[in-house]
Image (cartoon, rainbow over all chains, first blue to last red; front, side):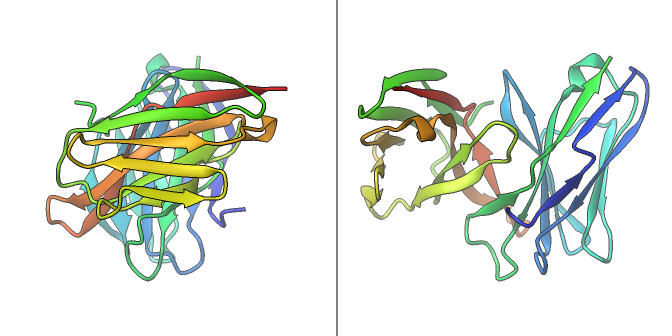
Length: 114
Length: 116
């Protein structure tokens, strides 16, 4: 158990809809990362938050947004969903003592867009 | 642009054999090279990592070999076991544009199957 909690584990929705994925990092970890995992693209970095502030953006679509709240949990919002958005979405947190190079991943939220 | 290229995409090895997965990178600013292991239904987890000041690191049956001049690194799994069947991701890390963000760039993964 990594200590990172993601909900929901599975989500099925229709094209055009909006969903919110939630992540609780390990206790005390200030950094939250979001990754998208698809069969053909592997793990794609989406966005990084540190203590409530956005620090870096990767391959995140404009239809997607995220935020980190004062209690350090994070939400990834996906809107105007398309079939191609079907994927596993992982949240990860990193050490409260600064960058050690290790990310602790949750078990992911599997999104299916029909 | 894929910054970390991983091969092969899939690998089948007999129990007791050696599994070898290769990665190549382009960005010379990368300064940390981990391997992550992912079992079905789980998130990736750190397996072993190396920094570019050493050419090899061994932990149990797992060894990373690193070639800085060639910008390549590889994972060797000795005496492969069925329990090693998983997807393996290589990754590389550097600071992101000086914004105080460190992140991992992952390869596309190798699905390893160890057959009895």
